[in-house]
Image 1 (cartoon, helix red, strand yellow):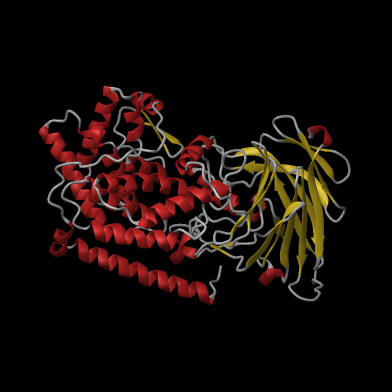
Image 2 (cartoon, rainbow, N blue to C red):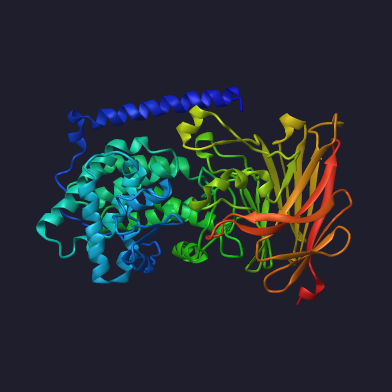
Length: 569
């Protein structure tokens, strides 16, 4: 795909910034300056931060039987070391060297598991004499430091002096390595995690607090830049916030343990992000599947939200992040009303503008395809397409387009996304219903049409009405040839769907309650196969309702979904 002027300028800017960061890193890594970042020796862990992430003791059973399950993939070690086998994927390899799995071994409270953990850490130290490869990517170093420091009680207990010195010495060396290389971390979460690890190391490891203020200032800068005013992340992915909060909460506690005052920005980000996560959580307990949200656990999300104390001022619209929430009684509708994030942060963004998800009670009815897990990345392009979302797809093309440019892809480590450039929305919390009107220009340059959607949720939460419109921005337009469109309504795999007369079908939820979906005669209704990508076992087959038709330049389709009278009361 050819690049426009703005994108060419963006690539040039990213290239200059990348070269600048690499130059700074090389300078600071030189023997002449590296001493500046060396501590007085990591001879003691002063603080062991609380591990807030959920642990799975059954992981130890797998390890004891020679299996290492990480990033949704299980490696059969066949008697070999996990550090010597060919990794099944890069994601698996990153998790292995990040050592987040140590918490699972600690959770067993078994000495054999703890001894295995210590042996694996010492083996890693013995094998990794050269600082290169995935294990020494800044974010991986950061995750490893956070994990080793958080599990210091298990790792350092009952060690002989030589092994104790090896682990503490390695921690010190890794801190220095991260201080000199964090600028090379990709923009977004990797850079943020790198700085969190540096601040944590300065607080928790003796002799390494000399650059604490510098790391603290850099972290505050990134927090302000990456977390939007409504609490969302600049990447528009809600899922990154859960991990961020679980890193920031212990960090704030460490400041208190050292009788230091944490920057106000840390608590401010935690508060705003918790509020945003609550906004993005549907009735099924999960985050709405927009822009990179993949498999997750309702229990894990509930644990994170539990740190808020339950005090939420639930906003109806998050304009900075580009989402709107319609909620009445037990029905929740969440809609995407935003443009893609900046190019460098859009490698997991999806072409789902004006799509929505809907839950009734704790059941998910309409669900976007979501983002595949680490073991199913071959499906990424399909999952990112507009057709995998509950929205209109014109001429079998997506409203946003993947940018295939080798230079740009190498810079951002993936395929960025372009468009729509403009998405506008108006939310009305009315006395009789909640209403959302939105439009985007994702099809304007190619076809001269604006796509608009109006959603109205009744006060009783028992009916959702929609109007989908294609029209020129001004005046009238007669296309040279009619264009096909399809309005997709993907159902969760646990929902059943059957025809129920002309232009009507019946959706049955897992609890047996039914809703009727109806559309006017403008489009033809069909029930078709679909895929739901965010199941932990991999993509699951599901069904979708599709409204198909053609437009000559101006078309409106009216549809509704309502609870059957037998469901009421």
